[in-house]
Length: 384
Image (cartoon, rainbow, N blue to C red; front, side, top):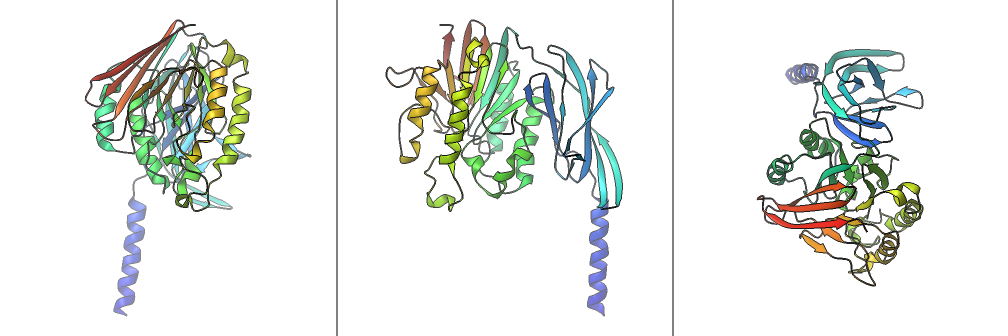
């Protein structure tokens, strides 16, 4: 009888603790996929809810946008999103994220809890013919707090329009909580709800059970890890270089098929480099985690030669990569590669880098800085 009473008492206590847990935001809102007069607003919550964005031009909040699929409103217990469409290029919009807790969701009964609202943030829609764009690049952060503490203040010293997370931002993905606290939350803070970050998948983000659900935490224009978009004078091509070992490597346990995936991506890339947007852009920049140098370093690099040849023929102006954990600038190489490659540094305070890029209609200027703020190198690409 004593044991039974103790058990019941514990059960009541657990229910009380669960009921008293405060429904809250885990992250600030963060902007994704700023493409074609649209932007996706995302954020992270501590529990299950119905979410929406209130927004409008200048200081107004006179519009409301939910996210639904197949006729059903999204009900998520962590990652929230709403895509704002029909935005005017060059216009400034205010917005706030809103979430209403769902405490019961049965087939014929729904009970709501608290409603929470974020602060009001503002963003300006990029203009297709903007004369300039600036961005920062992080790579191989491997979710290390000391690297964020060193590089984030450096990034904020100069204005930037968007941030690229160029792979291996995480070590692996074993839980949705990890994506929320190690990816969404810190980079939402960096961008302050007013500038987007662009995710480029690295080989480490392809590892772990939850890697299969990473697109719950981010948004891409076509729901893929390879895509393109324009911002001012630059046409960006984001590529997914996949894993760094052969598919049958014992580490993957027979659970990857990057050979087929890269073939599909290559077919897309062949169409992409023939597109009007690619051909007419003043500059074309390729972002990918593993450097596409055209050199085969191991058996799993068989794809390198074909990708490099296509990008060279298409007259890519610059390729920015990471992966090797060592800063380097590779000039174009006759007979092999027609474009320069800039590789960011590694995952320690000694080797980490921040890459800052400014592009106008006449030139791309790159500055690579160490975690201690020292300029390691600069590079300029002019119009040919």
